[in-house]
Every structure is written in structure tokens, then in C-alpha cells.
Length: 170
Image 1 (tube, rainbow, N blue to C red):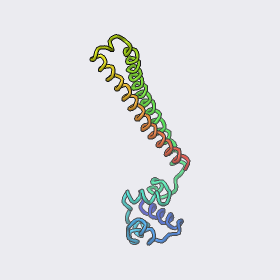
Image 2 (tube, helix red, strand yellow):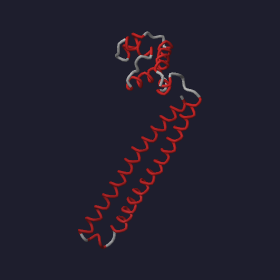
Image 3 (tube, rainbow, N blue to C red):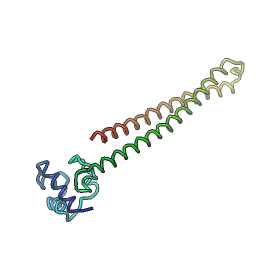
């Protein structure tokens, strides 16, 4: 990691925006002397400030750490990372779908059992009646849990895929 190269890149980014060191210092709540030290390569910003800088200048953090715009090699690395993340997401989705199918199968079994047993002579027995009511409540509860789980997990997957597509597009 070449601090002078990083500093020169930070200076270039600042000048592209047409800003002074003082304006950048105010933006990131540091002194203009600190900005000067960064741009001369004498010091480096803290990681949290580096992340803010990358967001502010709309550049990748790796570009800042490399001190230059991303190359074709970085594009290949990003594509590989995105593909690995998509594979991971697909694996997680398959696991999630399996869990939901199991929960739905159990709930369906409970509902069918309740439906078949409710019209029998066993239903006259209070303990069997209580067990069947419990089974019905359990089935409905399990269906609701599956629905909530599916909604929550599906939203996470959609948000993750949206971020990936956004990152891949930029």
C-alpha cells in the first residue's frame, strides 16, 4: 500500500469535485491540515473515514487503497465475487425452500389429521377433542410461522440480489 499514491488519488478526487481542502475537512469533521497530510501521503484516514470518502466520491474502497481507478483485473475480481455471492444466495434459497416445504408438509399433515378425525366418534371424548383442537392450533401456528419466515427471508434475498445487481451495473 503506497500512501503517497493513495494521497495523490485522494487529491485528484477532491479536485475533480472542485473542492478545497477546507471544504473536505468540514465534510469529514477533520482539520484541513489532516487533509493535507492525507494528500501528501504522510498519514492515512481511519477506516471509517475511508469508507465515507469512498461513498462521497462514489469510488470503490479498493480503488482508494490502490490509489488508482479500477483496472480490468479488478473488474474480473468483482465479477467473480458477485458470481460466488449469487451461488451462495442460491444455496441459501434452496435450504430455505426445503425448510418451508417441511414446515408446510407438517402443517398439512396436522390439518388433514384434524379434518379426518373431527367427524369420528372419538370426537365425543373430551381429551381427544382437546388434542384435536391443539393440533388445529399447532397447524395454523406453523402455517403462520412459515408465512412470516418466507416473507422475511424472501425480502432479505430480494434486497441482497438488488444490491448485487446495482453493484454489478456500476
